[in-house]
Length: 275
Image (tube, rainbow, N blue to C red; front, side, top):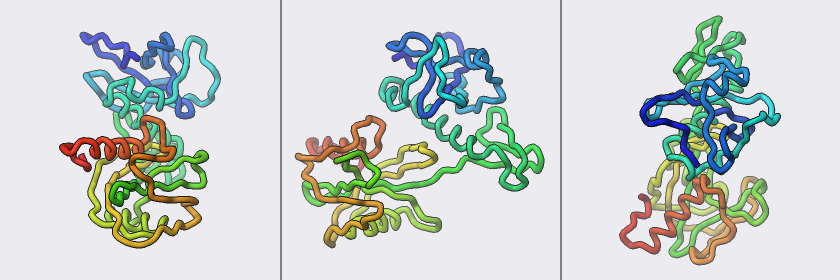
């Protein structure tokens, strides 16, 4: 896939035109190209309707939501998960950023203080009320995800809303006034009833569905027997790293990234388990 239709000697303004998790492209489906701002303007959007996302290599990127899922003649769409790994990482991160900001903007069209309509500030990632001047910044919700190891086994669980037979890592939201490390211990204890130790930070990953920032950790089993909460978790067990159940397949899954890293580190003694 072409990252963009950039001529390296020129600069362009692009717009991620989004619709229900999919991005509208032009060109051939085997060689999709992001739309230019001028392309999106021809579809009836004004520059003021587009939110500034960022600048990469002097090229500006904006985003806008398509209000319906009608087919646009001459264009096609791909889900963002389909382009993961096919575009440069910094461009894909802009797509995630665009998803986050558009979701946020869609839920903040009116001022929370006076109820009047707000407007997007040009080249700023905040919105300002036209009436009272109140400024609102995007909401970011921190959430943890933890891989708990017990020798050569890993703790995996499944939520009632997962597809059949799918297992993943323990995850949950950080409570107000809570330390991140406390959240990791609490979520594991609440959901599967065990204690953990040696909690190590793994990394972070934006997850804009709708506004999460995932904070990854790797920990060790300490004590206790598995006892699921039967609310957020319907099954959990220790699985051999040599014989894992069905785990997330989509490449942009942070749980899958963490599990893959653990498997790679297990084979390579020189590889750091926590990066």
